[in-house]
Image (cartoon, rainbow over all chains, first blue to last red; front, side):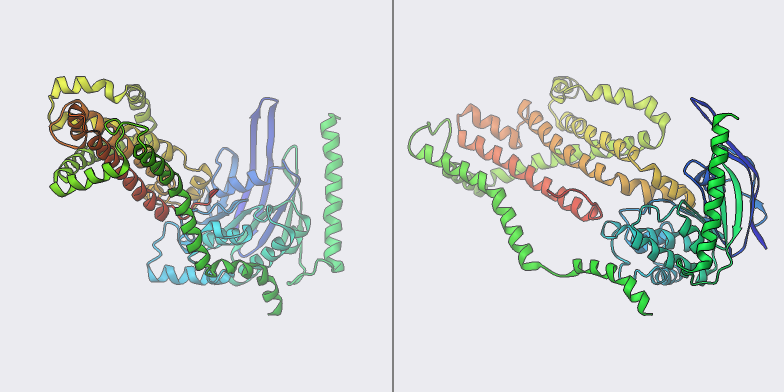
Length: 256
Length: 280
């Protein structure tokens, strides 16, 4: 069942150097419960695409449908995880997760507690963000989005600022959340390993113009091993695609 | 399961912040107090000694012990308390009037750019006029009564709160505003959960500065024309060359100023414990 449909999406920026085609004819569909990663070089428009889906940016041409209705503005249907945790520094962890919802309501308090356990932060409910590490804070941000039961969770390079160990730990946690909650995930990254490790489908984007160059299905069983030969095979396929893309880019920029 | 525990380890190391180091904390607190009190004690000792040895005349600079004697004397007669209460009432009423209007105006200007465009230029112009320069005008218009004094103090305490409330509201992180949008905060929740907490450090700073300004304006008002209050007590003592009474008045101002400031700082600490700043 299709949950998210992107149909003929175009977006151009006007800059001093002229028009930049940030998104060019983007089409794809996402099924309910799927984990899709979007990967590409910087400037390929992957974050722009995610912001458009979130409704944070509506200056595009084309259509985005979520669960049959068109996306026009931000809403809690589309949970959004930014590159930084963006917690409210004056609220404790549990209040950050509840945010505008009343934490003293029993069912909300219960759900917040369940999420704190899910993100493995038991005992930190009354801590302030300044007492958390970067990975912990990002997990709180994920819990905050999950509390609203989003139809899709949009993640914009959420682990980009974390060190390698914390990052792989966070990937475990995210997979665990996905397996338990069955939340549909759309995850932007520039890390090939991360893209393959998490996804059912990897969307490869290329720059100038920002467009989808390939969609690769990853049907390895979970838990995945990065060192396994099947994992490496997919990695090679994706790397090959990138090399092709780079050549094309060279040709484009040379004006041939 | 063992794998999960391995991953948990680096996080659990953080919990040692829950350990209690209270004896060290107490010692540190005492040392901090000692560092603060050192300079005043040295000054007082030097002062007393120079008076005692006859370096300066007692009428110009009475010794601390003389001033303290006078302080006790005035306290027992009840004169001091009476003057102090009148000054306190004046400064607080002026502060509350000015501060309240400033909070409302600062919020208006902060939230609505149209209000800013039509109100702020005028307010900024009035702000540059020294309070003491308009005092003669107030006396001419409203006489020597309480009204002109309250008005003067209100004017002085208006600006710090106004400027800082405005700054605080405009200083809200646009990244957090994006979060509020994504989480579909209502307008009301945006104000109560995001803008006000974020502006709170500035608002409290404004209140602190404003209390100081109210105190200065009070002295100005009482020195110019009044028949009671700590300021009057000082002027009256000057005409009779009772220098020690002047000192008692000054000490009252200093003490009370410090107490109100500490009170605000206490609230700052409690309300803003979430802040993660350089502690020195």
